[in-house]
Length: 477
Ligand SMILES: Cc1cc2nc3c(=O)[nH]c(=O)nc-3n(C[C@H](O)[C@H](O)[C@H](O)COP(=O)(O)OP(=O)(O)OC[C@H]3O[C@@H](n4cnc5c(N)ncnc54)[C@H](O)[C@@H]3O)c2cc1C
Ligand SMILES: NC(=O)c1ccc[n+]([C@@H]2O[C@H](COP(=O)([O-])OP(=O)(O)OC[C@H]3O[C@@H](n4cnc5c(N)ncnc54)[C@H](O)[C@@H]3O)[C@@H](O)[C@H]2O)c1
Image 1 (cartoon, rainbow, N blue to C red):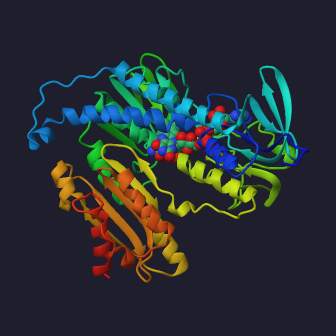
Image 2 (cartoon, protein in one colour):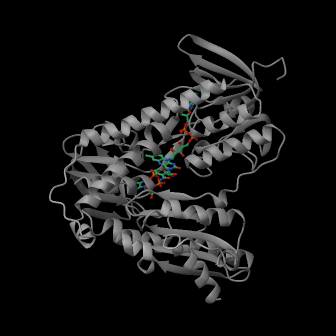
C-alpha cells in the first residue's frame, strides 16, 4: 500500500456485495475497511434472502404435510399437522443471527477493519464517516460504494410497521393476519403469498400491471398462476393501483384503475404487505462532491467494469456495486460485481455477464430462470435479424418428478434457430432454483442446443427435464 493512504480500499456498505468484495480484496492483498451504518450483512442477511427463505422452508413443510391427497398418493397418512407461528419466526431469526455472526467473524479473521457509521465520499480518495463519536476522515486509494436498496413505498401508502408493512417487517412474522392484502406480485409478493397461504391466511394480491408476475416469462407466469395462485386462498386484482392505504383496524385500501387513476374499490383487510419494488439508498452519499449524478430513482451510474461514471466518464478510483447500481437486484449479482470490481482495481479487466446470472423465486414449487424471456428474445431477434425458437418439456414426463408425486412443472428453452445458441431458460417446478444453474453455466459459455443435447444427465433426476428439452430442440430443428 502507498504510505499516503489509510487503506488501499474503503467499502461503504457491508451487505452481501460489500462483504464479497472485502473478502476478495484481502485475498488480493489489499488493506481494506468496511463502513456500515446498520446491521452487518445488509438486506440479504437481516431482512431479505435469509429470513424469507427460512420462512418459506418452514411454511413449505406445513403446506406439504397438509396436502393429504399428495401424501395419500405416496401411501402416507397423517392425521394432525400443527405449527407454532412464533417458533417459525424464531427459526428465521436464529438463522439471521448465525449468518450475521459468520459474516462478522469472516471479516475479523481476514483483518478487515469495520467502522460503524454513515459513510460518504468527501472528495477524491477521501471518505467521511459520521460515527457516534463524531466525524472521521479516512483516505483510501480506492473507494467502493455498496449502499444497497430499501423498500419503495408509493405515495399515498402509509406504513405503521404492524398493520401496514414492507418485507422489512414481514420477515419477522410477528402475526398471521386472517386476511392480508399484498400489493405487488413480483418476487416479494409471490414468495410471501406462498408463506401466508401455507400458514392459513386469506390473501388479496393486488397488481398494477395487466398480468400477475409481470417480470417473468409469460408462459411461466401463466402456469405459476394456475398452480401457485388459483387453487389457493388467494384472490387477485390486476390493473389496479393501491392509491391510498391507511393503517389501523381495519386497514383501508383505496384501489384505483391503473390507467385512469380513478378510484374503483375500497378494501378493508386485517393487514397489508407493501411489495412494490425497491429503490437505491444513495441520498447523502456525497456523490455530488465528485460530480456524479444519479439515474432515476437514484441509481449510481457505472460502466461494465463497475467504475462510477460522471458525465459518462469513469471517476478515478471510485467503484460501485450491488442493488444501488440498478443492474440486477440479487444478492449473488452484488457479490459478483464486488469480485469483478476488485479484479479491476488490481488491474485485471473483468466485466460481469449479467445475461448469465440466474434468478429464482422460492415458492412451492419454485421458479428459476436465466437469460431472456421469449418476448425479449423475439425483440432482440427482430432487431438483429435472427429467428427465435423455443421448446417445452414437462415434469409430468419425468421419472423423478413422478416418484416424488410432484409433476406440476415445465422447462422452457429459448434459442436462436440459426446457431442454436441458448438465449433463455425458464423452469417452473420442483427444485427449479437448483436446476437452473446448469442452464446459467451453459448461457455463460454461449453454448448451443446441439452441444447441450449430447451431454449426459444422471437418471432418474429432475435435470433430465432440461436434457429432454435440449434434445427436443435439436430434433424439432
Ligand atoms: C424480502 C427479500 C428477499 C430477498 N431474497 C433474495 C433471494 O432469495 N435471492 C437473492 O439473490 N436476492 C434476494 N433479495 C435481494 C438481496 O437481498 C439484495 O439484492 C442484496 O441484499 C443486495 O446487496 P447489496 O450489498 O447491494 O446491498 P444491501 O444488502 O442492501 O447492503 C447495503 C448495506 O449498506 C449500508 N449502507 C447504506 N448506505 C450507507 C452509508 N452511507 N454508510 C454506511 N453504510 C451504508 C446499509 O445499511 C446496508 O447494510 C431479497 C430481498 C428482499 C427484500
Ligand atoms: N428470490 C429472490 O431472488 C428475491 C426475493 C425477494 C426480493 N428480491 C429482490 O427484491 C426486489 C424487490 O422485490 P419486489 O417484489 O418488491 O419488487 P418487483 O419489482 O419484483 O415487483 C413489484 C411489483 O409491484 C407492482 N406495483 C408497484 N406499485 C404498485 C401499486 N401502487 N399498486 C399495485 N401494484 C404495484 C409492480 O407492477 C410490480 O409487479 C426485486 O427486484 C428482487 O430483485 C429477490
